[in-house]
Image (cartoon, rainbow, N blue to C red; front, side, top):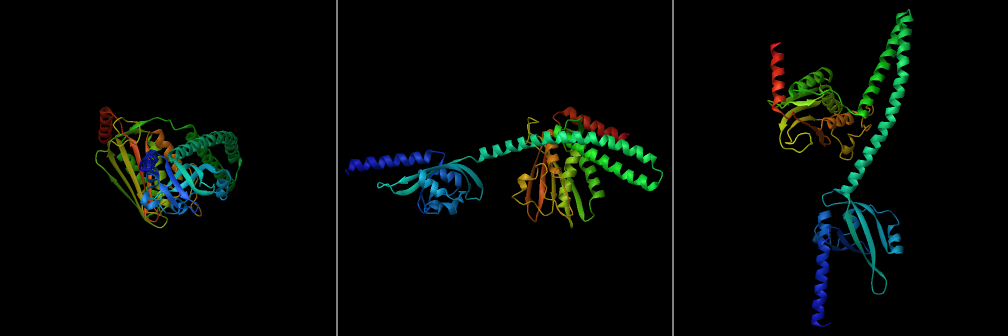
Length: 383
């Protein structure tokens, strides 16, 4: 080959290498023993390993591809393979890719290597999963709405019959049995009403709320009902901004989260409720300036395993068993109420060290609202 020919070939290779690095896809070439021969910039960005770290490595050991058995046979027979793979990055995160593979043959027609082009579809898969979850919940909602209405229709004549029979029974023991039945039926009716309110959405009268009062009142309820082995602390900032909402529902949010914390500390522990004003955090779209009340509920309990932490707000998901039973509606209810208040909730946890829930609620967005709270507070003190 002449000097000009060699220069032309080198220039062509340089252009091809540049194109490989320009693409956003991870472009990889591996040999027939799974050793990585080419690893472009797209692969570096997606997986975190630099080319110097990846070249020569076994691709299966590096990425933990979720390839099905018989994959190599399909690639050999057809010369190419397309599909979705679950893989692992350098920092241990899971990514999903749409993978296209092509078998490369040498001049004699023998397989020599495999060209791989992987496109990151992790965000797309996450959105699809969220949409499926919403669709599933809508289906559940329609199903349970019908069941709840039917149960309500059955409970009404049962309650009426029990009241009539209760008055006709002369002996005290029979009346006690009917009272037990009546109370149980009323509880079932309240649960059905609660389920219907979750399914239909929560839209009740909103008032201006002083967060400090709401939290201290809730803490007193918890102290009177929780085991004495659990210490309950509050740490509230001065001059907490007022919020607008349904006080009963927001208290239910606090109680539901705290009940979960109690169940995570069966022997003993510390439950801490903190509150502060936060500014400029884009948590919700309720207020333009991003001003929120932040409530932190922290326990020293068992913690939540990483593999289930993203499921705890799903309806009917529960880890409680044995002596502790749960409907799986507690944290689902919390998320629904907060969504209805244009708020949000975050969770962080370490197994064996405890859990913290961070609750963000948009604050009242006018000076008039703040004045109304102070006026009401002053009137309460003078009355």
